[in-house]
Amino acid sequence: MAQSRNSKRRSARKRQGSGGRRAPGAPPRPAPAPRVTPPPTGTPSIKASRDEAPKPIWAPLPVTELLILVGIVTAVVGVVRATPAVVLAGLVIVMVPSLELALREHFAGYRSHSAMLAGVLALIVGPGGAVALRALDVVALPVWALAAIVLLVFAPAFTLLRRAFRRRSGGLSFRV
Image 1 (cartoon, rainbow, N blue to C red):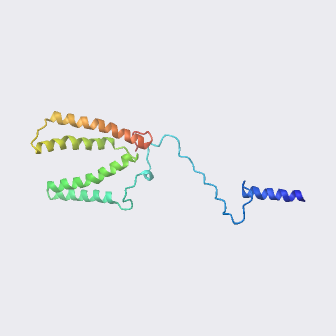
Image 2: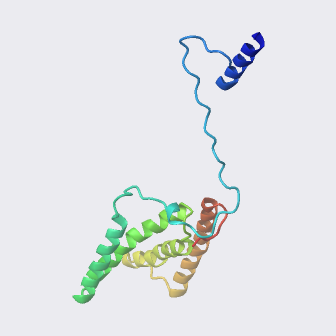
């Protein structure tokens, strides 16, 4: 009889856990921590899912898409009315949110936009600088010098942007 009582007590202790008895009035034991599954250890997929897309800070509002739509409508109005300034304004309105989206996706490791971002930088520095120098009456650059500047800006920018994307994407140089 005494033996069956002891075995019942041991069974009850096993069910309670390894700590044995609690003092009366003591707080309950914390539940064991849930198991966390480690992230997959392989090469990330070349095909990116839409769930991985980086969200903008204005996430529920489609600000980027609306600005692109406004820019397209403005450019079309400029073409219909034959007003180059309005066409240019529409293209700039389209370019700004598109560039923001490309930067966000690139530096999140979602899609690689290395060539486009390096090209935009090269066009800002090269022809943009040439126009600024010409407007200031400093110097007029020959076409070969302008092409050399564009290449000298594009090549290292492309390399650095590609390296940044590889770090963010887990080693991939591009994703589709």
